Length: 109
Length: 274
Image (cartoon, rainbow over all chains, first blue to last red; front, side):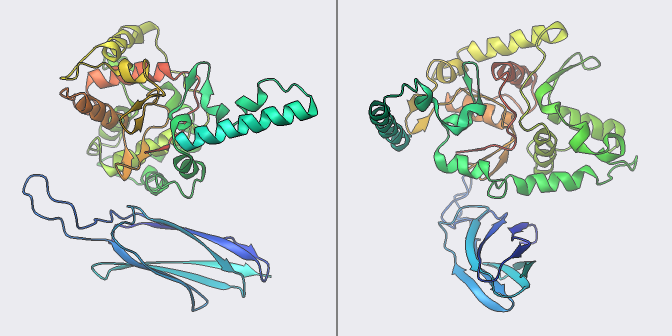
Protein backbone atom coordinates (compact mmCIF):
# COMPACT_ATOMS: atom_id res chain seq x y z
CA UNK A 1 0.00 0.00 0.00
CA UNK A 2 3.07 2.18 -0.24
CA UNK A 3 1.70 3.85 -3.34
CA UNK A 4 -1.62 4.87 -1.74
CA UNK A 5 -1.97 8.59 -1.43
CA UNK A 6 -4.32 10.04 1.14
CA UNK A 7 -5.97 13.44 1.28
CA UNK A 8 -7.74 14.87 4.31
CA UNK A 9 -9.61 18.11 4.75
CA UNK A 10 -10.07 19.53 8.23
CA UNK A 11 -11.02 23.15 8.96
CA UNK A 12 -8.09 25.22 10.31
CA UNK A 13 -10.11 26.49 13.24
CA UNK A 14 -13.45 25.91 14.93
CA UNK A 15 -15.38 27.25 17.91
CA UNK A 16 -15.63 25.09 20.99
CA UNK A 17 -18.69 22.89 20.75
CA UNK A 18 -18.98 23.41 17.03
CA UNK A 19 -19.56 20.36 14.86
CA UNK A 20 -17.21 20.35 11.90
CA UNK A 21 -16.90 18.11 8.87
CA UNK A 22 -13.85 16.05 8.09
CA UNK A 23 -13.33 14.67 4.59
CA UNK A 24 -10.93 11.90 3.69
CA UNK A 25 -9.94 10.27 0.41
CA UNK A 26 -7.33 7.64 -0.31
CA UNK A 27 -6.19 6.07 -3.55
CA UNK A 28 -6.50 2.30 -3.40
CA UNK A 29 -7.62 -0.28 -5.93
CA UNK A 30 -9.78 -2.11 -3.33
CA UNK A 31 -9.53 -5.47 -5.09
CA UNK A 32 -12.66 -7.31 -3.98
CA UNK A 33 -11.29 -10.85 -4.21
CA UNK A 34 -14.18 -11.91 -6.42
CA UNK A 35 -12.62 -11.17 -9.77
CA UNK A 36 -10.73 -13.63 -11.90
CA UNK A 37 -7.82 -13.12 -14.19
CA UNK A 38 -9.43 -13.12 -17.64
CA UNK A 39 -6.64 -15.13 -19.24
CA UNK A 40 -5.69 -17.69 -16.61
CA UNK A 41 -8.95 -17.91 -14.67
CA UNK A 42 -7.03 -17.62 -11.42
CA UNK A 43 -8.70 -15.71 -8.63
CA UNK A 44 -7.25 -12.28 -7.93
CA UNK A 45 -6.70 -12.23 -4.17
CA UNK A 46 -8.62 -9.77 -2.06
CA UNK A 47 -6.71 -6.62 -1.24
CA UNK A 48 -8.77 -3.92 0.41
CA UNK A 49 -8.43 -1.37 3.14
CA UNK A 50 -10.32 -3.17 5.90
CA UNK A 51 -10.07 -0.60 8.67
CA UNK A 52 -10.08 3.14 8.99
CA UNK A 53 -9.70 5.06 12.21
CA UNK A 54 -9.49 8.67 13.27
CA UNK A 55 -8.39 9.86 16.66
CA UNK A 56 -8.78 13.36 18.05
CA UNK A 57 -6.08 14.16 20.60
CA UNK A 58 -5.73 10.43 21.18
CA UNK A 59 -9.44 9.76 21.59
CA UNK A 60 -11.07 7.56 19.00
CA UNK A 61 -13.73 9.46 17.08
CA UNK A 62 -14.39 6.95 14.31
CA UNK A 63 -13.33 3.35 13.81
CA UNK A 64 -14.82 1.53 10.88
CA UNK A 65 -14.37 -1.87 9.30
CA UNK A 66 -14.66 -1.91 5.56
CA UNK A 67 -15.73 -4.83 3.40
CA UNK A 68 -15.30 -5.75 -0.26
CA UNK A 69 -18.23 -3.68 -1.53
CA UNK A 70 -16.45 -0.42 -0.75
CA UNK A 71 -15.43 1.31 -3.98
CA UNK A 72 -11.91 1.93 -5.19
CA UNK A 73 -10.35 5.17 -3.98
CA UNK A 74 -12.70 5.32 -0.98
CA UNK A 75 -14.01 8.68 0.17
CA UNK A 76 -15.34 9.13 3.68
CA UNK A 77 -16.74 12.23 5.31
CA UNK A 78 -17.80 12.44 8.96
CA UNK A 79 -18.50 14.99 11.67
CA UNK A 80 -16.52 15.74 14.79
CA UNK A 81 -17.39 18.00 17.72
CA UNK A 82 -14.71 20.60 18.43
CA UNK A 83 -13.37 20.15 21.93
CA UNK A 84 -9.75 21.22 22.30
CA UNK A 85 -7.07 22.42 19.95
CA UNK A 86 -5.00 19.55 18.78
CA UNK A 87 -4.41 16.90 16.24
CA UNK A 88 -6.57 14.55 14.26
CA UNK A 89 -4.74 11.40 13.28
CA UNK A 90 -6.01 9.23 10.44
CA UNK A 91 -5.01 5.66 9.79
CA UNK A 92 -5.92 3.28 6.98
CA UNK A 93 -5.01 -0.41 7.29
CA UNK A 94 -5.12 -2.88 4.41
CA UNK A 95 -5.29 -6.67 4.20
CA UNK A 96 -1.51 -6.94 4.27
CA UNK A 97 -1.45 -5.02 7.53
CA UNK A 98 0.24 -2.09 5.85
CA UNK A 99 -0.89 1.30 7.03
CA UNK A 100 -1.08 4.83 5.73
CA UNK A 101 -1.16 7.55 8.33
CA UNK A 102 -1.88 11.21 8.08
CA UNK A 103 -2.41 13.98 10.60
CA UNK A 104 -4.10 17.35 10.55
CA UNK A 105 -4.27 19.97 13.25
CA UNK A 106 -7.14 22.19 14.31
CA UNK A 107 -7.32 25.27 16.52
CA UNK A 108 -10.33 25.48 18.80
CA UNK A 109 -11.18 28.84 20.31
CA UNK B 1 -32.62 10.29 -14.27
CA UNK B 2 -36.13 8.85 -13.93
CA UNK B 3 -36.37 10.11 -10.38
CA UNK B 4 -34.98 13.49 -11.38
CA UNK B 5 -37.53 13.79 -14.15
CA UNK B 6 -40.28 13.00 -11.70
CA UNK B 7 -38.88 15.60 -9.37
CA UNK B 8 -38.75 18.13 -12.18
CA UNK B 9 -42.35 17.38 -13.13
CA UNK B 10 -43.45 17.86 -9.54
CA UNK B 11 -41.45 21.04 -9.48
CA UNK B 12 -43.12 22.29 -12.62
CA UNK B 13 -46.57 21.42 -11.34
CA UNK B 14 -45.83 23.24 -8.09
CA UNK B 15 -44.50 26.15 -10.11
CA UNK B 16 -47.69 26.31 -12.12
CA UNK B 17 -49.79 26.32 -8.97
CA UNK B 18 -47.74 29.08 -7.40
CA UNK B 19 -47.87 31.10 -10.61
CA UNK B 20 -51.63 30.68 -10.78
CA UNK B 21 -51.98 31.69 -7.14
CA UNK B 22 -49.95 34.84 -7.29
CA UNK B 23 -50.98 35.58 -10.83
CA UNK B 24 -47.52 36.48 -12.02
CA UNK B 25 -46.38 35.17 -15.37
CA UNK B 26 -42.83 34.07 -14.77
CA UNK B 27 -42.66 32.58 -18.25
CA UNK B 28 -40.28 29.73 -18.75
CA UNK B 29 -37.84 30.73 -16.06
CA UNK B 30 -38.98 28.00 -13.69
CA UNK B 31 -38.57 25.31 -16.32
CA UNK B 32 -35.04 26.51 -17.05
CA UNK B 33 -34.09 27.01 -13.43
CA UNK B 34 -31.10 24.80 -12.77
CA UNK B 35 -27.48 25.12 -11.88
CA UNK B 36 -26.21 23.37 -15.01
CA UNK B 37 -26.69 26.30 -17.40
CA UNK B 38 -22.98 26.95 -17.49
CA UNK B 39 -22.52 23.44 -18.90
CA UNK B 40 -24.52 24.35 -21.98
CA UNK B 41 -23.56 26.40 -25.03
CA UNK B 42 -26.00 26.93 -27.87
CA UNK B 43 -27.59 23.57 -28.57
CA UNK B 44 -24.70 21.71 -27.01
CA UNK B 45 -24.63 20.24 -23.51
CA UNK B 46 -21.78 18.71 -21.60
CA UNK B 47 -21.96 15.17 -20.28
CA UNK B 48 -22.35 16.81 -16.89
CA UNK B 49 -25.96 17.62 -17.72
CA UNK B 50 -26.58 13.93 -18.42
CA UNK B 51 -24.84 12.71 -15.27
CA UNK B 52 -26.68 11.53 -12.18
CA UNK B 53 -27.06 13.87 -9.23
CA UNK B 54 -24.56 11.87 -7.18
CA UNK B 55 -21.96 11.90 -9.95
CA UNK B 56 -22.37 15.66 -10.35
CA UNK B 57 -21.91 16.12 -6.61
CA UNK B 58 -18.57 14.30 -6.83
CA UNK B 59 -17.41 16.61 -9.60
CA UNK B 60 -18.67 19.76 -7.88
CA UNK B 61 -16.64 19.15 -4.74
CA UNK B 62 -12.94 19.29 -5.54
CA UNK B 63 -12.23 17.23 -2.49
CA UNK B 64 -14.70 14.44 -3.18
CA UNK B 65 -13.44 14.25 -6.78
CA UNK B 66 -10.98 11.33 -6.75
CA UNK B 67 -9.25 12.72 -9.86
CA UNK B 68 -7.44 15.15 -7.59
CA UNK B 69 -5.22 12.32 -6.42
CA UNK B 70 -3.81 12.34 -9.97
CA UNK B 71 -3.81 16.11 -10.26
CA UNK B 72 -1.70 16.30 -7.09
CA UNK B 73 0.70 13.84 -8.66
CA UNK B 74 0.76 15.90 -11.86
CA UNK B 75 1.58 19.02 -9.90
CA UNK B 76 4.52 17.24 -8.27
CA UNK B 77 5.72 15.90 -11.63
CA UNK B 78 5.55 19.39 -13.15
CA UNK B 79 8.55 20.53 -11.15
CA UNK B 80 10.42 17.20 -11.03
CA UNK B 81 13.55 17.29 -13.16
CA UNK B 82 14.01 14.16 -15.27
CA UNK B 83 16.19 13.07 -18.17
CA UNK B 84 19.69 13.88 -19.39
CA UNK B 85 19.03 17.62 -19.79
CA UNK B 86 18.20 17.93 -16.10
CA UNK B 87 15.07 19.89 -16.84
CA UNK B 88 11.53 19.76 -15.54
CA UNK B 89 8.39 21.16 -17.12
CA UNK B 90 8.68 24.21 -14.88
CA UNK B 91 12.22 24.98 -16.16
CA UNK B 92 10.74 26.26 -19.41
CA UNK B 93 7.08 26.76 -18.59
CA UNK B 94 7.43 28.23 -15.11
CA UNK B 95 4.10 28.29 -13.30
CA UNK B 96 1.51 26.07 -14.96
CA UNK B 97 -1.31 28.24 -13.61
CA UNK B 98 -0.16 30.99 -15.99
CA UNK B 99 1.53 29.22 -18.87
CA UNK B 100 -0.88 26.30 -19.29
CA UNK B 101 -3.99 28.42 -19.00
CA UNK B 102 -6.11 27.95 -22.11
CA UNK B 103 -4.07 25.05 -23.49
CA UNK B 104 -6.97 22.61 -23.18
CA UNK B 105 -9.19 24.92 -25.24
CA UNK B 106 -6.73 24.85 -28.17
CA UNK B 107 -5.74 21.17 -28.40
CA UNK B 108 -5.50 19.12 -30.57
CA UNK B 109 -3.49 21.70 -32.52
CA UNK B 110 -1.70 21.56 -35.85
CA UNK B 111 2.02 20.92 -35.62
CA UNK B 112 4.07 22.18 -38.57
CA UNK B 113 7.06 19.93 -38.03
CA UNK B 114 4.89 16.82 -37.71
CA UNK B 115 2.65 17.91 -40.55
CA UNK B 116 -0.40 16.76 -38.63
CA UNK B 117 -2.50 17.34 -35.53
CA UNK B 118 -1.10 16.64 -32.09
CA UNK B 119 -2.92 16.11 -28.83
CA UNK B 120 -1.89 17.34 -25.39
CA UNK B 121 -0.43 13.93 -24.59
CA UNK B 122 1.74 14.03 -27.70
CA UNK B 123 2.97 17.54 -26.92
CA UNK B 124 3.93 16.42 -23.41
CA UNK B 125 5.98 13.57 -24.85
CA UNK B 126 7.57 15.83 -27.48
CA UNK B 127 8.74 18.07 -24.63
CA UNK B 128 9.97 15.11 -22.63
CA UNK B 129 12.00 13.65 -25.48
CA UNK B 130 13.31 16.83 -27.11
CA UNK B 131 13.71 19.26 -24.23
CA UNK B 132 14.19 17.05 -21.21
CA UNK B 133 15.83 14.14 -23.05
CA UNK B 134 13.76 11.86 -20.88
CA UNK B 135 11.77 8.76 -21.70
CA UNK B 136 8.30 9.46 -23.06
CA UNK B 137 5.36 8.57 -20.84
CA UNK B 138 3.18 5.65 -21.91
CA UNK B 139 -0.20 6.92 -23.09
CA UNK B 140 -2.44 5.51 -20.40
CA UNK B 141 0.18 5.50 -17.62
CA UNK B 142 -0.64 7.14 -14.35
CA UNK B 143 2.09 9.76 -14.98
CA UNK B 144 0.73 10.73 -18.38
CA UNK B 145 -2.83 10.94 -17.06
CA UNK B 146 -1.65 13.00 -14.09
CA UNK B 147 0.29 15.40 -16.26
CA UNK B 148 -2.45 15.80 -18.88
CA UNK B 149 -5.08 16.31 -16.21
CA UNK B 150 -2.89 18.83 -14.41
CA UNK B 151 -2.25 20.78 -17.62
CA UNK B 152 -5.86 20.66 -18.82
CA UNK B 153 -7.28 21.56 -15.42
CA UNK B 154 -5.52 24.94 -15.65
CA UNK B 155 -8.11 25.90 -18.29
CA UNK B 156 -11.08 24.97 -16.16
CA UNK B 157 -14.13 27.09 -16.96
CA UNK B 158 -12.67 28.46 -20.20
CA UNK B 159 -14.64 27.90 -23.39
CA UNK B 160 -13.57 25.12 -25.76
CA UNK B 161 -12.24 26.73 -28.92
CA UNK B 162 -10.18 24.47 -31.18
CA UNK B 163 -8.94 25.80 -34.49
CA UNK B 164 -10.43 23.87 -37.37
CA UNK B 165 -9.58 26.13 -40.31
CA UNK B 166 -6.32 26.67 -42.18
CA UNK B 167 -3.86 23.81 -41.85
CA UNK B 168 -6.21 21.93 -39.52
CA UNK B 169 -9.06 21.83 -42.04
CA UNK B 170 -8.20 18.55 -43.81
CA UNK B 171 -7.74 16.80 -40.45
CA UNK B 172 -11.03 18.23 -39.23
CA UNK B 173 -12.74 16.74 -42.28
CA UNK B 174 -11.13 13.36 -41.56
CA UNK B 175 -12.35 13.51 -37.98
CA UNK B 176 -15.83 14.45 -39.13
CA UNK B 177 -15.86 11.56 -41.59
CA UNK B 178 -14.79 9.18 -38.80
CA UNK B 179 -17.59 10.44 -36.57
CA UNK B 180 -20.23 9.89 -39.23
CA UNK B 181 -18.90 6.62 -40.62
CA UNK B 182 -20.54 3.36 -39.64
CA UNK B 183 -18.18 0.69 -38.33
CA UNK B 184 -18.02 -2.63 -36.52
CA UNK B 185 -20.32 -5.63 -36.49
CA UNK B 186 -23.10 -3.47 -35.11
CA UNK B 187 -22.55 -1.10 -38.02
CA UNK B 188 -22.87 2.03 -35.94
CA UNK B 189 -21.29 5.45 -36.26
CA UNK B 190 -20.44 7.75 -33.36
CA UNK B 191 -23.29 9.98 -34.43
CA UNK B 192 -25.88 7.21 -34.17
CA UNK B 193 -25.59 7.35 -30.40
CA UNK B 194 -24.26 10.80 -29.68
CA UNK B 195 -26.25 12.89 -32.14
CA UNK B 196 -29.30 10.88 -33.17
CA UNK B 197 -29.96 9.42 -29.73
CA UNK B 198 -28.39 11.73 -27.17
CA UNK B 199 -30.72 11.75 -24.20
CA UNK B 200 -32.10 8.29 -24.95
CA UNK B 201 -31.19 5.11 -23.15
CA UNK B 202 -28.91 2.43 -24.56
CA UNK B 203 -29.92 -0.37 -22.21
CA UNK B 204 -29.16 1.05 -18.78
CA UNK B 205 -26.96 3.87 -20.04
CA UNK B 206 -28.16 7.35 -20.73
CA UNK B 207 -26.46 8.45 -23.94
CA UNK B 208 -24.77 11.82 -23.80
CA UNK B 209 -23.71 14.02 -26.68
CA UNK B 210 -20.19 12.65 -26.41
CA UNK B 211 -18.56 15.93 -25.51
CA UNK B 212 -14.87 15.88 -24.72
CA UNK B 213 -14.41 18.89 -22.46
CA UNK B 214 -13.88 16.93 -19.23
CA UNK B 215 -10.97 14.69 -20.26
CA UNK B 216 -8.92 13.19 -18.76
CA UNK B 217 -11.80 12.32 -16.46
CA UNK B 218 -12.45 10.04 -13.54
CA UNK B 219 -14.80 7.34 -14.68
CA UNK B 220 -16.47 5.38 -11.90
CA UNK B 221 -16.44 2.24 -14.05
CA UNK B 222 -12.70 2.54 -14.64
CA UNK B 223 -12.11 3.49 -11.00
CA UNK B 224 -9.39 5.77 -12.23
CA UNK B 225 -8.58 8.59 -14.56
CA UNK B 226 -8.76 7.86 -18.29
CA UNK B 227 -7.86 9.60 -21.51
CA UNK B 228 -10.27 10.42 -24.31
CA UNK B 229 -8.58 7.84 -26.51
CA UNK B 230 -9.45 5.19 -23.96
CA UNK B 231 -13.06 6.35 -24.24
CA UNK B 232 -12.87 6.19 -28.05
CA UNK B 233 -11.47 2.68 -27.86
CA UNK B 234 -14.23 1.64 -25.48
CA UNK B 235 -16.90 3.03 -27.79
CA UNK B 236 -15.35 1.32 -30.81
CA UNK B 237 -15.24 -2.00 -28.94
CA UNK B 238 -18.89 -1.55 -27.92
CA UNK B 239 -19.95 -1.50 -31.57
CA UNK B 240 -17.60 -4.47 -32.09
CA UNK B 241 -15.18 -2.58 -34.27
CA UNK B 242 -11.44 -3.00 -34.00
CA UNK B 243 -10.19 -0.06 -31.95
CA UNK B 244 -7.33 2.11 -33.16
CA UNK B 245 -4.22 2.60 -31.06
CA UNK B 246 -3.71 5.22 -28.38
CA UNK B 247 -2.47 8.35 -30.07
CA UNK B 248 -3.31 7.12 -33.56
CA UNK B 249 -3.92 9.76 -36.21
CA UNK B 250 -7.52 8.57 -36.56
CA UNK B 251 -8.25 9.29 -32.91
CA UNK B 252 -6.40 12.61 -32.81
CA UNK B 253 -8.43 13.79 -35.80
CA UNK B 254 -11.59 12.55 -34.15
CA UNK B 255 -10.58 14.36 -30.96
CA UNK B 256 -10.34 17.55 -33.02
CA UNK B 257 -13.80 17.08 -34.49
CA UNK B 258 -15.32 16.18 -31.12
CA UNK B 259 -13.62 19.23 -29.61
CA UNK B 260 -15.20 21.40 -32.27
CA UNK B 261 -18.60 19.85 -31.56
CA UNK B 262 -18.17 21.06 -27.99
CA UNK B 263 -17.11 24.59 -28.94
CA UNK B 264 -18.15 27.08 -26.31
CA UNK B 265 -18.56 24.46 -23.58
CA UNK B 266 -16.43 25.04 -20.50
CA UNK B 267 -13.37 22.87 -19.87
CA UNK B 268 -14.26 20.67 -16.89
CA UNK B 269 -11.08 18.64 -16.45
CA UNK B 270 -11.13 16.59 -14.27
CA UNK B 271 -14.76 15.63 -14.76
CA UNK B 272 -16.44 12.67 -13.07
CA UNK B 273 -18.68 10.37 -15.07
CA UNK B 274 -20.22 6.97 -14.48
